[in-house]
Image 1 (cartoon, rainbow, N blue to C red):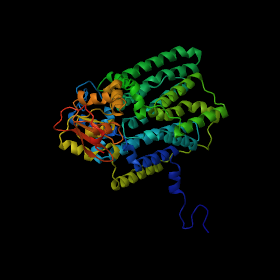
Image 2: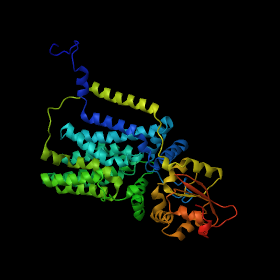
Image 3: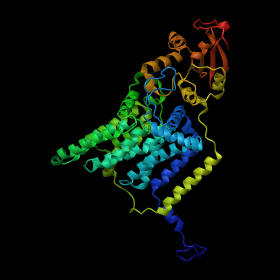
Image 4: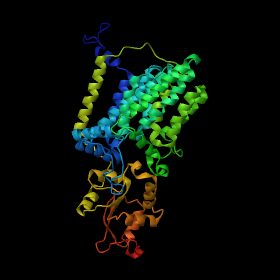
Length: 500
Protein backbone atom coordinates (compact mmCIF):
# COMPACT_ATOMS: atom_id res chain seq x y z
CA UNK A 1 0.00 0.00 0.00
CA UNK A 2 1.42 3.42 -0.97
CA UNK A 3 1.05 6.75 0.73
CA UNK A 4 -1.06 9.29 -1.17
CA UNK A 5 1.15 11.37 -3.44
CA UNK A 6 3.86 8.69 -3.63
CA UNK A 7 4.22 5.48 -5.57
CA UNK A 8 4.96 2.11 -4.05
CA UNK A 9 8.74 2.66 -3.96
CA UNK A 10 8.64 6.06 -2.31
CA UNK A 11 9.01 8.35 -5.35
CA UNK A 12 6.72 11.23 -6.04
CA UNK A 13 4.92 10.36 -9.31
CA UNK A 14 4.40 12.60 -12.28
CA UNK A 15 7.51 14.78 -12.11
CA UNK A 16 8.74 13.67 -15.50
CA UNK A 17 5.26 12.99 -16.86
CA UNK A 18 4.00 16.44 -15.87
CA UNK A 19 6.74 18.12 -17.89
CA UNK A 20 5.98 16.02 -20.96
CA UNK A 21 2.27 16.37 -20.27
CA UNK A 22 2.63 20.12 -20.62
CA UNK A 23 4.23 19.87 -24.05
CA UNK A 24 1.73 21.44 -26.49
CA UNK A 25 -0.14 18.98 -28.69
CA UNK A 26 0.96 20.75 -31.86
CA UNK A 27 4.63 20.12 -30.98
CA UNK A 28 3.99 16.41 -30.35
CA UNK A 29 2.29 16.30 -33.72
CA UNK A 30 5.11 18.16 -35.48
CA UNK A 31 7.81 15.97 -33.95
CA UNK A 32 5.89 12.82 -34.84
CA UNK A 33 5.31 13.98 -38.41
CA UNK A 34 9.00 14.77 -38.82
CA UNK A 35 10.05 11.31 -37.62
CA UNK A 36 7.52 9.62 -39.90
CA UNK A 37 8.82 11.70 -42.80
CA UNK A 38 12.43 10.71 -42.10
CA UNK A 39 11.62 7.02 -41.63
CA UNK A 40 9.78 7.04 -44.96
CA UNK A 41 12.48 9.29 -46.42
CA UNK A 42 13.00 7.35 -49.63
CA UNK A 43 9.46 8.30 -50.59
CA UNK A 44 10.51 11.96 -50.63
CA UNK A 45 13.20 11.06 -53.18
CA UNK A 46 10.71 9.67 -55.67
CA UNK A 47 10.85 12.65 -58.04
CA UNK A 48 13.45 13.12 -60.76
CA UNK A 49 13.53 16.89 -60.21
CA UNK A 50 15.32 16.43 -56.87
CA UNK A 51 18.43 15.54 -58.88
CA UNK A 52 18.61 18.75 -60.88
CA UNK A 53 17.41 20.97 -58.03
CA UNK A 54 20.38 19.80 -55.96
CA UNK A 55 22.76 20.04 -58.93
CA UNK A 56 21.81 23.68 -59.57
CA UNK A 57 22.40 24.51 -55.92
CA UNK A 58 25.86 22.96 -56.14
CA UNK A 59 26.59 24.93 -59.32
CA UNK A 60 25.68 28.18 -57.54
CA UNK A 61 28.00 27.28 -54.66
CA UNK A 62 30.87 26.28 -56.94
CA UNK A 63 30.65 29.32 -59.22
CA UNK A 64 29.56 31.93 -56.66
CA UNK A 65 27.09 33.13 -59.29
CA UNK A 66 23.45 32.79 -60.28
CA UNK A 67 22.36 31.02 -63.48
CA UNK A 68 20.96 33.38 -66.08
CA UNK A 69 21.00 31.08 -69.13
CA UNK A 70 20.50 27.37 -69.65
CA UNK A 71 23.69 25.37 -69.26
CA UNK A 72 22.28 21.85 -69.00
CA UNK A 73 20.43 21.08 -72.24
CA UNK A 74 21.52 20.93 -75.88
CA UNK A 75 18.05 21.92 -77.11
CA UNK A 76 17.93 25.26 -75.24
CA UNK A 77 21.59 25.89 -74.45
CA UNK A 78 22.34 29.56 -73.88
CA UNK A 79 18.71 30.66 -73.77
CA UNK A 80 17.58 32.90 -70.88
CA UNK A 81 16.65 30.98 -67.75
CA UNK A 82 16.75 31.88 -64.07
CA UNK A 83 16.31 29.80 -60.94
CA UNK A 84 13.61 31.37 -58.77
CA UNK A 85 14.20 28.65 -56.14
CA UNK A 86 17.93 29.33 -55.84
CA UNK A 87 18.05 29.61 -52.04
CA UNK A 88 16.28 26.30 -51.45
CA UNK A 89 18.52 24.67 -54.05
CA UNK A 90 21.65 25.92 -52.30
CA UNK A 91 20.40 24.69 -48.93
CA UNK A 92 19.60 21.27 -50.41
CA UNK A 93 23.06 21.12 -52.02
CA UNK A 94 24.78 21.96 -48.72
CA UNK A 95 22.71 19.32 -46.92
CA UNK A 96 23.60 16.75 -49.59
CA UNK A 97 27.29 17.57 -49.33
CA UNK A 98 27.20 17.10 -45.56
CA UNK A 99 24.99 14.03 -45.20
CA UNK A 100 24.36 12.54 -48.63
CA UNK A 101 20.72 12.01 -49.53
CA UNK A 102 19.87 11.98 -45.82
CA UNK A 103 20.49 15.75 -45.84
CA UNK A 104 17.72 16.70 -48.31
CA UNK A 105 15.38 14.19 -46.65
CA UNK A 106 15.87 15.77 -43.22
CA UNK A 107 15.52 19.29 -44.61
CA UNK A 108 12.33 18.43 -46.46
CA UNK A 109 11.00 16.75 -43.32
CA UNK A 110 11.73 19.82 -41.21
CA UNK A 111 9.94 22.10 -43.68
CA UNK A 112 6.91 19.84 -43.89
CA UNK A 113 6.63 19.24 -40.14
CA UNK A 114 7.08 22.95 -39.39
CA UNK A 115 4.28 23.92 -41.79
CA UNK A 116 1.68 21.51 -40.48
CA UNK A 117 2.71 22.01 -36.84
CA UNK A 118 2.31 25.77 -37.34
CA UNK A 119 -1.15 25.12 -38.77
CA UNK A 120 -2.09 23.07 -35.69
CA UNK A 121 -0.63 25.71 -33.36
CA UNK A 122 -2.60 28.52 -34.99
CA UNK A 123 -5.84 26.53 -34.75
CA UNK A 124 -5.38 25.94 -30.99
CA UNK A 125 -6.20 29.63 -30.51
CA UNK A 126 -9.79 28.89 -31.47
CA UNK A 127 -10.27 25.14 -31.01
CA UNK A 128 -9.37 22.49 -28.48
CA UNK A 129 -5.84 21.15 -29.06
CA UNK A 130 -7.11 17.69 -29.98
CA UNK A 131 -9.44 19.14 -32.59
CA UNK A 132 -6.67 21.37 -33.99
CA UNK A 133 -4.34 18.39 -34.31
CA UNK A 134 -7.04 16.28 -36.00
CA UNK A 135 -7.52 19.00 -38.62
CA UNK A 136 -3.74 19.15 -39.15
CA UNK A 137 -3.55 15.36 -39.50
CA UNK A 138 -6.29 15.40 -42.14
CA UNK A 139 -4.47 18.20 -43.98
CA UNK A 140 -1.28 16.14 -43.85
CA UNK A 141 -2.91 13.02 -45.27
CA UNK A 142 -4.53 14.99 -48.08
CA UNK A 143 -1.19 16.60 -49.00
CA UNK A 144 1.09 13.56 -48.60
CA UNK A 145 1.26 12.84 -52.35
CA UNK A 146 3.39 15.96 -52.83
CA UNK A 147 5.87 15.40 -50.00
CA UNK A 148 8.94 15.23 -52.24
CA UNK A 149 12.32 16.79 -51.52
CA UNK A 150 12.00 19.90 -53.63
CA UNK A 151 12.03 23.65 -52.85
CA UNK A 152 8.28 23.91 -52.22
CA UNK A 153 8.56 21.95 -48.96
CA UNK A 154 11.03 24.47 -47.53
CA UNK A 155 8.65 27.27 -48.51
CA UNK A 156 5.56 25.71 -46.89
CA UNK A 157 6.13 27.03 -43.33
CA UNK A 158 6.85 30.50 -44.75
CA UNK A 159 3.58 30.35 -46.70
CA UNK A 160 1.60 29.35 -43.59
CA UNK A 161 3.20 32.11 -41.47
CA UNK A 162 2.54 34.69 -44.21
CA UNK A 163 -1.12 33.79 -44.66
CA UNK A 164 -1.61 33.55 -40.90
CA UNK A 165 -0.42 37.15 -40.66
CA UNK A 166 -2.90 38.23 -43.34
CA UNK A 167 -5.74 36.27 -41.72
CA UNK A 168 -5.11 37.78 -38.30
CA UNK A 169 -5.04 41.28 -39.79
CA UNK A 170 -8.34 40.69 -41.61
CA UNK A 171 -9.96 39.15 -38.52
CA UNK A 172 -8.90 42.13 -36.40
CA UNK A 173 -9.95 44.66 -39.07
CA UNK A 174 -6.51 46.21 -39.40
CA UNK A 175 -3.67 46.33 -41.88
CA UNK A 176 -0.95 43.67 -41.66
CA UNK A 177 2.25 44.37 -39.79
CA UNK A 178 5.24 45.43 -41.85
CA UNK A 179 7.18 42.77 -39.94
CA UNK A 180 5.59 40.32 -42.39
CA UNK A 181 7.60 41.74 -45.30
CA UNK A 182 10.77 39.68 -44.59
CA UNK A 183 8.61 36.58 -45.00
CA UNK A 184 7.64 37.43 -48.57
CA UNK A 185 11.28 38.20 -49.36
CA UNK A 186 12.35 34.84 -47.96
CA UNK A 187 9.55 33.09 -49.84
CA UNK A 188 10.54 34.83 -53.10
CA UNK A 189 14.04 33.37 -52.79
CA UNK A 190 12.90 29.89 -51.78
CA UNK A 191 10.19 29.13 -54.34
CA UNK A 192 8.24 30.69 -57.18
CA UNK A 193 4.99 30.12 -55.29
CA UNK A 194 5.53 33.48 -53.58
CA UNK A 195 3.35 34.95 -56.33
CA UNK A 196 0.39 33.37 -54.53
CA UNK A 197 1.36 35.26 -51.38
CA UNK A 198 1.25 38.53 -53.29
CA UNK A 199 -2.07 37.64 -54.90
CA UNK A 200 -3.70 36.89 -51.54
CA UNK A 201 -3.12 40.42 -50.23
CA UNK A 202 -6.05 41.84 -52.23
CA UNK A 203 -8.77 39.36 -51.10
CA UNK A 204 -7.74 39.63 -47.47
CA UNK A 205 -7.80 43.42 -47.79
CA UNK A 206 -11.37 43.19 -49.12
CA UNK A 207 -12.29 40.92 -46.24
CA UNK A 208 -10.92 43.39 -43.70
CA UNK A 209 -12.79 46.26 -45.38
CA UNK A 210 -16.02 44.24 -45.57
CA UNK A 211 -16.06 43.71 -41.80
CA UNK A 212 -14.76 47.15 -40.81
CA UNK A 213 -16.93 50.06 -39.75
CA UNK A 214 -17.85 52.38 -42.59
CA UNK A 215 -16.02 55.28 -40.94
CA UNK A 216 -12.74 53.31 -40.92
CA UNK A 217 -12.78 51.88 -44.42
CA UNK A 218 -11.00 54.69 -46.26
CA UNK A 219 -8.04 54.87 -43.87
CA UNK A 220 -7.91 51.05 -43.64
CA UNK A 221 -7.92 50.74 -47.43
CA UNK A 222 -5.01 53.19 -47.69
CA UNK A 223 -2.98 51.18 -45.16
CA UNK A 224 -3.62 47.95 -47.08
CA UNK A 225 -2.63 49.65 -50.35
CA UNK A 226 0.64 50.85 -48.82
CA UNK A 227 1.26 47.37 -47.47
CA UNK A 228 0.55 45.83 -50.88
CA UNK A 229 3.05 48.15 -52.59
CA UNK A 230 5.66 47.28 -49.98
CA UNK A 231 4.96 43.58 -50.60
CA UNK A 232 5.68 44.03 -54.30
CA UNK A 233 8.93 45.79 -53.50
CA UNK A 234 9.97 43.20 -50.90
CA UNK A 235 9.26 40.33 -53.31
CA UNK A 236 11.76 41.81 -55.75
CA UNK A 237 14.62 41.57 -53.26
CA UNK A 238 16.17 38.58 -55.01
CA UNK A 239 19.30 38.16 -57.16
CA UNK A 240 17.03 38.52 -60.18
CA UNK A 241 14.89 41.44 -59.01
CA UNK A 242 11.47 41.61 -60.67
CA UNK A 243 12.50 38.84 -63.10
CA UNK A 244 11.48 36.33 -60.41
CA UNK A 245 7.88 37.44 -60.85
CA UNK A 246 8.03 36.86 -64.60
CA UNK A 247 9.68 33.45 -64.21
CA UNK A 248 6.87 32.24 -61.97
CA UNK A 249 4.34 33.45 -64.50
CA UNK A 250 6.00 31.45 -67.30
CA UNK A 251 5.36 28.22 -65.41
CA UNK A 252 1.62 28.94 -65.46
CA UNK A 253 1.78 29.60 -69.22
CA UNK A 254 2.59 26.00 -70.12
CA UNK A 255 -0.96 25.55 -71.43
CA UNK A 256 -1.65 22.17 -73.02
CA UNK A 257 1.62 20.74 -71.71
CA UNK A 258 0.27 20.82 -68.15
CA UNK A 259 -2.20 18.04 -68.93
CA UNK A 260 0.75 15.71 -69.63
CA UNK A 261 2.70 16.57 -66.46
CA UNK A 262 1.26 14.52 -63.55
CA UNK A 263 1.46 17.18 -60.84
CA UNK A 264 -0.19 19.78 -63.05
CA UNK A 265 -3.17 17.60 -63.93
CA UNK A 266 -6.64 18.26 -62.48
CA UNK A 267 -8.06 16.17 -59.67
CA UNK A 268 -9.36 12.78 -60.77
CA UNK A 269 -12.85 12.14 -59.38
CA UNK A 270 -13.10 8.67 -60.92
CA UNK A 271 -11.78 7.17 -57.66
CA UNK A 272 -12.11 8.06 -54.00
CA UNK A 273 -8.76 9.42 -52.89
CA UNK A 274 -8.08 11.24 -49.58
CA UNK A 275 -8.75 14.67 -51.07
CA UNK A 276 -12.05 13.68 -52.67
CA UNK A 277 -13.23 11.98 -49.46
CA UNK A 278 -12.34 15.02 -47.32
CA UNK A 279 -13.95 17.39 -49.82
CA UNK A 280 -17.21 15.41 -49.77
CA UNK A 281 -17.08 15.23 -45.97
CA UNK A 282 -16.65 19.00 -45.75
CA UNK A 283 -19.56 19.53 -48.11
CA UNK A 284 -21.71 17.20 -46.02
CA UNK A 285 -20.76 19.02 -42.80
CA UNK A 286 -21.66 22.35 -44.38
CA UNK A 287 -25.08 21.07 -45.42
CA UNK A 288 -25.68 19.44 -42.04
CA UNK A 289 -24.60 22.22 -39.69
CA UNK A 290 -25.46 25.21 -41.88
CA UNK A 291 -22.06 26.94 -41.77
CA UNK A 292 -22.29 30.58 -42.88
CA UNK A 293 -19.38 32.60 -44.27
CA UNK A 294 -19.02 36.19 -45.38
CA UNK A 295 -18.93 36.77 -49.15
CA UNK A 296 -15.21 37.59 -49.04
CA UNK A 297 -14.35 34.39 -47.15
CA UNK A 298 -16.47 32.40 -49.61
CA UNK A 299 -14.46 33.87 -52.49
CA UNK A 300 -11.20 33.00 -50.73
CA UNK A 301 -12.23 29.40 -50.10
CA UNK A 302 -13.57 28.97 -53.62
CA UNK A 303 -10.36 30.40 -55.08
CA UNK A 304 -8.21 27.97 -53.09
CA UNK A 305 -10.53 25.11 -54.01
CA UNK A 306 -10.36 26.01 -57.70
CA UNK A 307 -6.57 25.87 -57.55
CA UNK A 308 -6.67 22.45 -55.89
CA UNK A 309 -9.14 21.06 -58.40
CA UNK A 310 -7.19 22.46 -61.36
CA UNK A 311 -3.76 21.11 -60.36
CA UNK A 312 -3.12 18.31 -57.88
CA UNK A 313 0.11 20.01 -56.79
CA UNK A 314 -2.06 22.79 -55.27
CA UNK A 315 -3.91 20.43 -52.95
CA UNK A 316 -1.47 21.06 -50.08
CA UNK A 317 -2.05 24.80 -50.51
CA UNK A 318 -5.78 24.27 -50.03
CA UNK A 319 -5.20 21.86 -47.13
CA UNK A 320 -2.93 24.30 -45.28
CA UNK A 321 -4.65 27.62 -46.02
CA UNK A 322 -8.37 26.80 -46.06
CA UNK A 323 -8.39 25.95 -42.30
CA UNK A 324 -6.75 29.31 -41.57
CA UNK A 325 -9.35 31.16 -43.64
CA UNK A 326 -12.21 29.26 -41.98
CA UNK A 327 -10.86 29.23 -38.41
CA UNK A 328 -12.69 32.29 -37.06
CA UNK A 329 -16.07 31.63 -38.76
CA UNK A 330 -16.00 27.98 -37.64
CA UNK A 331 -14.99 28.89 -34.09
CA UNK A 332 -18.07 31.11 -33.85
CA UNK A 333 -20.19 28.11 -34.81
CA UNK A 334 -18.45 25.35 -32.87
CA UNK A 335 -16.56 27.27 -30.18
CA UNK A 336 -13.49 26.16 -28.27
CA UNK A 337 -13.95 22.98 -26.30
CA UNK A 338 -11.50 21.97 -23.62
CA UNK A 339 -10.27 22.90 -20.21
CA UNK A 340 -8.28 25.86 -19.01
CA UNK A 341 -5.07 26.37 -20.99
CA UNK A 342 -1.99 24.97 -19.27
CA UNK A 343 1.36 26.72 -19.49
CA UNK A 344 3.87 24.93 -21.66
CA UNK A 345 6.86 23.24 -20.07
CA UNK A 346 10.18 24.41 -21.49
CA UNK A 347 11.82 21.29 -20.10
CA UNK A 348 9.23 19.09 -21.80
CA UNK A 349 9.55 20.93 -25.09
CA UNK A 350 13.32 20.60 -24.98
CA UNK A 351 13.01 16.90 -24.17
CA UNK A 352 10.77 16.29 -27.19
CA UNK A 353 13.09 18.19 -29.53
CA UNK A 354 16.20 16.45 -28.23
CA UNK A 355 14.46 13.06 -28.39
CA UNK A 356 13.41 13.61 -31.99
CA UNK A 357 16.95 14.72 -32.90
CA UNK A 358 18.55 11.67 -31.30
CA UNK A 359 16.05 9.31 -32.94
CA UNK A 360 16.78 10.92 -36.31
CA UNK A 361 20.54 10.64 -35.82
CA UNK A 362 20.30 6.96 -34.90
CA UNK A 363 18.05 6.14 -37.85
CA UNK A 364 20.18 8.04 -40.37
CA UNK A 365 23.35 6.36 -39.06
CA UNK A 366 22.02 2.90 -39.92
CA UNK A 367 19.87 3.58 -42.97
CA UNK A 368 20.91 4.52 -46.50
CA UNK A 369 18.62 6.81 -48.45
CA UNK A 370 18.51 6.30 -52.20
CA UNK A 371 16.61 8.19 -54.93
CA UNK A 372 13.87 6.34 -56.74
CA UNK A 373 15.44 3.69 -58.95
CA UNK A 374 13.02 4.22 -61.84
CA UNK A 375 14.61 7.64 -62.54
CA UNK A 376 18.17 6.39 -62.11
CA UNK A 377 19.29 4.30 -65.13
CA UNK A 378 22.86 3.87 -63.91
CA UNK A 379 23.95 1.02 -66.18
CA UNK A 380 22.44 2.53 -69.32
CA UNK A 381 24.04 5.91 -68.67
CA UNK A 382 27.45 4.34 -68.03
CA UNK A 383 27.20 2.63 -71.40
CA UNK A 384 26.26 5.89 -73.10
CA UNK A 385 29.25 7.56 -71.47
CA UNK A 386 31.54 4.86 -72.85
CA UNK A 387 30.17 5.45 -76.33
CA UNK A 388 30.56 9.22 -75.82
CA UNK A 389 26.96 9.91 -76.77
CA UNK A 390 26.36 13.66 -76.77
CA UNK A 391 22.83 14.18 -78.08
CA UNK A 392 20.48 11.78 -76.35
CA UNK A 393 16.72 11.73 -76.79
CA UNK A 394 15.22 10.59 -73.51
CA UNK A 395 12.13 10.68 -71.31
CA UNK A 396 11.76 13.77 -69.13
CA UNK A 397 12.15 11.66 -66.00
CA UNK A 398 15.74 10.79 -66.91
CA UNK A 399 16.76 14.43 -67.33
CA UNK A 400 17.56 15.05 -63.68
CA UNK A 401 19.94 12.11 -63.38
CA UNK A 402 21.65 12.97 -66.68
CA UNK A 403 22.31 16.48 -65.36
CA UNK A 404 24.09 15.04 -62.33
CA UNK A 405 26.25 13.00 -64.71
CA UNK A 406 27.26 16.09 -66.70
CA UNK A 407 25.46 14.85 -69.80
CA UNK A 408 23.59 17.49 -71.86
CA UNK A 409 19.87 16.75 -71.70
CA UNK A 410 17.19 16.89 -74.35
CA UNK A 411 14.74 18.21 -71.74
CA UNK A 412 13.99 17.92 -68.04
CA UNK A 413 11.59 19.23 -65.40
CA UNK A 414 12.19 22.92 -66.10
CA UNK A 415 9.04 23.29 -68.16
CA UNK A 416 9.17 27.08 -68.23
CA UNK A 417 12.47 26.88 -70.14
CA UNK A 418 11.20 24.61 -72.91
CA UNK A 419 7.72 26.05 -73.34
CA UNK A 420 4.34 24.49 -74.05
CA UNK A 421 4.77 23.98 -77.80
CA UNK A 422 8.06 22.11 -77.46
CA UNK A 423 6.83 19.93 -74.58
CA UNK A 424 3.61 18.94 -76.32
CA UNK A 425 5.50 18.11 -79.49
CA UNK A 426 7.98 15.88 -77.64
CA UNK A 427 5.37 14.16 -75.47
CA UNK A 428 3.25 13.41 -78.53
CA UNK A 429 6.26 12.22 -80.52
CA UNK A 430 7.42 9.80 -77.82
CA UNK A 431 3.86 8.49 -77.57
CA UNK A 432 3.90 8.03 -81.39
CA UNK A 433 0.81 10.13 -81.85
CA UNK A 434 2.63 11.34 -84.94
CA UNK A 435 5.39 9.09 -86.31
CA UNK A 436 6.70 11.78 -88.66
CA UNK A 437 7.09 14.14 -85.70
CA UNK A 438 9.20 11.57 -83.87
CA UNK A 439 11.40 10.95 -86.91
CA UNK A 440 11.80 14.71 -87.29
CA UNK A 441 13.06 14.98 -83.71
CA UNK A 442 15.76 12.41 -84.42
CA UNK A 443 17.00 14.29 -87.45
CA UNK A 444 16.45 17.96 -86.57
CA UNK A 445 18.28 17.60 -83.25
CA UNK A 446 20.91 15.23 -84.70
CA UNK A 447 20.19 12.60 -82.06
CA UNK A 448 22.93 9.98 -81.77
CA UNK A 449 21.30 7.83 -79.04
CA UNK A 450 17.97 7.32 -77.33
CA UNK A 451 17.33 6.46 -73.67
CA UNK A 452 13.69 5.54 -73.19
CA UNK A 453 11.63 3.56 -70.71
CA UNK A 454 10.50 0.14 -71.99
CA UNK A 455 6.86 1.26 -71.92
CA UNK A 456 7.47 4.25 -74.22
CA UNK A 457 5.69 3.55 -77.54
CA UNK A 458 8.64 4.95 -79.51
CA UNK A 459 10.83 2.04 -78.35
CA UNK A 460 9.01 -0.35 -80.65
CA UNK A 461 9.54 1.97 -83.59
CA UNK A 462 13.24 2.36 -82.78
CA UNK A 463 13.64 -1.43 -82.97
CA UNK A 464 12.42 -1.26 -86.58
CA UNK A 465 14.16 1.89 -87.79
CA UNK A 466 16.85 1.39 -90.38
CA UNK A 467 20.15 2.83 -89.21
CA UNK A 468 19.47 2.27 -85.50
CA UNK A 469 20.45 -0.55 -83.20
CA UNK A 470 19.34 -1.57 -79.72
CA UNK A 471 22.47 -2.02 -77.57
CA UNK A 472 21.04 -2.22 -74.07
CA UNK A 473 17.79 -2.98 -72.27
CA UNK A 474 16.69 -3.65 -68.71
CA UNK A 475 13.57 -3.02 -66.67
CA UNK A 476 14.36 0.70 -66.42
CA UNK A 477 15.48 1.75 -69.88
CA UNK A 478 16.22 0.81 -73.47
CA UNK A 479 19.15 2.30 -75.37
CA UNK A 480 19.38 2.66 -79.15
CA UNK A 481 22.29 4.16 -81.07
CA UNK A 482 22.91 4.94 -84.70
CA UNK A 483 24.72 2.24 -86.62
CA UNK A 484 28.17 3.37 -87.63
CA UNK A 485 27.53 2.41 -91.23
CA UNK A 486 24.29 4.39 -91.41
CA UNK A 487 24.14 8.17 -91.08
CA UNK A 488 20.42 8.66 -91.56
CA UNK A 489 17.39 7.01 -90.17
CA UNK A 490 13.99 7.32 -91.66
CA UNK A 491 13.39 4.03 -93.35
CA UNK A 492 11.48 1.50 -91.27
CA UNK A 493 12.70 -2.08 -91.35
CA UNK A 494 10.42 -4.91 -92.24
CA UNK A 495 8.90 -6.80 -89.34
CA UNK A 496 11.21 -9.75 -90.03
CA UNK A 497 14.27 -7.58 -89.48
CA UNK A 498 13.05 -6.01 -86.22
CA UNK A 499 14.60 -7.02 -82.93
CA UNK A 500 12.34 -8.79 -80.46
